[in-house]
Image (cartoon, rainbow, N blue to C red; front, top):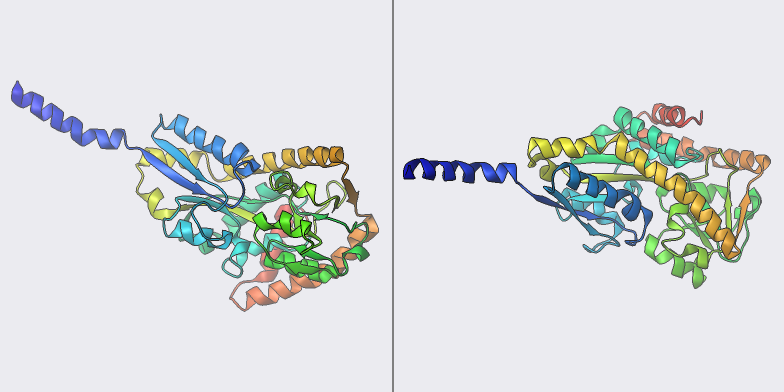
Length: 338
């Protein structure tokens, strides 16, 4: 009996780690903890993983670059295992992921719901090889960037001229320059103070960042395309996981993460972004801020002015062995912007 008991205990000891293995995933990003990305997407996603794994998967959030470094370093932090999961933008690592940049070409995205659905399909069809070093959990856009200015009101295509505006990506900077503005690069956390101090006149940015960063307190004017039309600029965003961390998980935990990632997670971001868009509109108007919309004539003028950005991009990625014309056409078809 003692021998049988010892064997049973030994068998239990061998099986328990596999059955009850727990993992705490370090999730890092660049925005404040109050940002919708954390509060309304990443935390609920983590809660779903925890529930479906019976508590075997947990998350620890590290917002606002709490693991150190800059937003541009998040990609390497997850690749090297400093973080297990990051939410970041490939454009913060300029030139590193050229194929995915197609979705940041001018006038590509009109809203987050359709943009994110198209973005995930584009990644699957055209950019998987760029991210072979990672476990890709989601791709999304920011839904398109309005322009937020402190003292200078933008009403027409001519009003861009001479304005210093923070831009988030390489192609966003080129788009702004083509419109007559002066792009300035800086981390998201510095934008509000920079506008308040007059370092920049404003910023190109998605509506979902306006309230968490208190941008509406210093930027009193906002301008965007009419509803349903594509924004001049957008930022591609992504959720990446350390590949080795994922590969080391038991098969059932991998399956839970896969079930709740990909198109599902990308579209969750899209739904929240569009809801936050409406919320931000209401709150900035209640504050007394002003939101302008470009006329049809101004939209055509801006598209004409920025056409060269796409042609230059096609040439640049061609030098890296990519068919830029094909990639741009694929992105526009998926996004409904042919």
